[in-house]
Image (cartoon, rainbow, N blue to C red; front, side, top):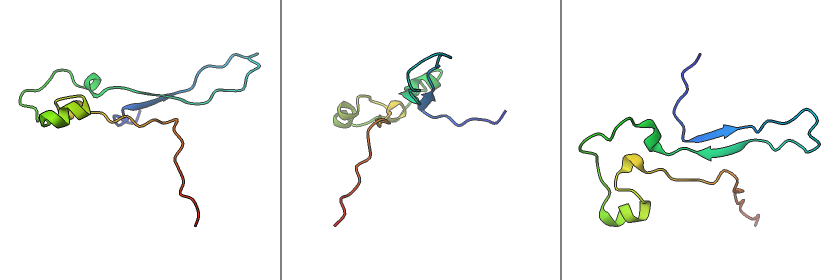
Length: 80
């Protein structure tokens, strides 16, 4: 089995019954936080500045995870 690279965005397909009259829902996405993949907090981690830590919601860059909404449509520029 090939080795899969870590990704914080996961995908699953909801099961559909044999006689389900509704159309398939399609892929669902969810995000997993970085602390799930770290067994313990290593000593002497780099830290954000206090202001940046308040903006990002964590003191340590290792635990920062930017969330990008997979359901949000990408805005296309208007033609000139």
